[in-house]
Length: 392
Length: 191
Image 1 (cartoon, rainbow over the protein chains, first blue to last red):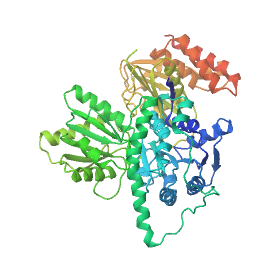
Image 2 (cartoon, chains in turn cyan, blue; image 1 turned 180 degrees about the horizontal axis):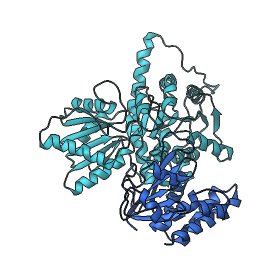
Image 3 (cartoon, one colour; image 1 turned 45 degrees about the vertical axis):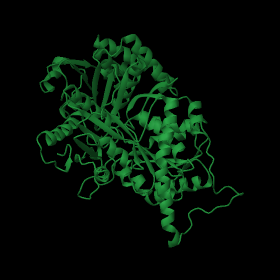
Image 4 (cartoon, each protein chain N blue to C red; image 1 turned 135 degrees about the horizontal axis):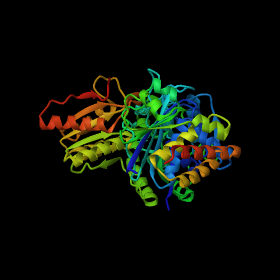
């Protein structure tokens, strides 16, 4: 039976790591993800797991060491946030292009400047073109559940790609909330042993990792990487289905809350989804058909599925928690509207920017967004394409 | 108690307001409640004003925002009354619990016209008597539990003893003093 507990998001991910007992964890501390290597190294010091912990001098090195360990054939992970992820930039691309199924616990935090330690999605979204799988959590439960599913997706023979398991810095990483944990044995059986097909420490089948490719091979390498990411879609769904079997908790590319008959839908990522659901419930009581689409899998991007989920609503708000400085909206705003256009779904949309540097997002804020959408539809108001929420 | 209560803590970095909020989440969880305990981080340093929050509910909690209309406010350091609007949004049928040697009548003029219940607890005196040192968070935790009625005294003390045994596994000598501080504060509030 499920174990009822209470813990923070960082504790939840660390607990999942303990239950998985991976082979190698290189890490360098950075707020707000520091607790994860701290807790994991405590588990190691107490003899509860036998993961090899490598203290390094920077994130450039932690990801480099993770690449080396993973290429050698070890089940590998690290954790970081913000500038730490930015400092891994070059290595993130190497991990993905060398098809190394590394797991990264990303605790989302803004990027400078101004320097700030609080949550937004600048770090995760900034890494959107690095070839990693990215899965985002609303709360501690999802962070835990997603981490337990991570290696099954990343290590699958049709995928073999690194995976980021993301949660909102402080908002979930440092908030103690109720959670249901799985028994150690169940997790162990679900995740299974890692058996890489090819790895450096296999004298019977020598390979080379990361050699120079002449122009004749580069495009094919990149295309193969893309195929792997496309394959990940089915694997993510298959793993989620199997996970539901042991946990009773269901996951897909996104979570839909009262969207089926909704006139107005807010699409967003992360902890603000719960807040927006409370707003949707309030509005439903007032006779407004409001719904929430919470994106869980951002890479690979489920474009067609999102378009289908939005096709029957009158207007949708797309909420971005990072500025992309293209002067035409945020990351989700651009990608979701492109998905709608490609699928010939011509609903009204407004792209909002919210929660930068930890700016609070409240039930009232979410109600205000729904109010905007109603105005556009009921009064035929011309939608402002790109708005900030809570800007002073 | 209400279906959901919201508590806002005001303290200074290093006084343990965040720890107290997490401990409250811990004990409320043990009584079968859904809980949230979370800090709001600014530029952290010893002595800077900090805020922490609790939600305690019979139903699953989905909202992830700060608390603007709390049922209860706890002020761990009375010097904050000069610099922070501690009663902002505080519900009239709720209460503010302040760590001070003064009476409620004496501090009320500093509360921006707050008309609800004012509870004062001399956490310094209690802590120094029970622990021989000034750690205000244990007495303030007991005071907010007593004032809000989140749980009864016996259950609270029993769960706190278990929490302290876990938290202070490496220094069990401080458990008895903390337990005494909790009981003294609980009784001082007298609910």
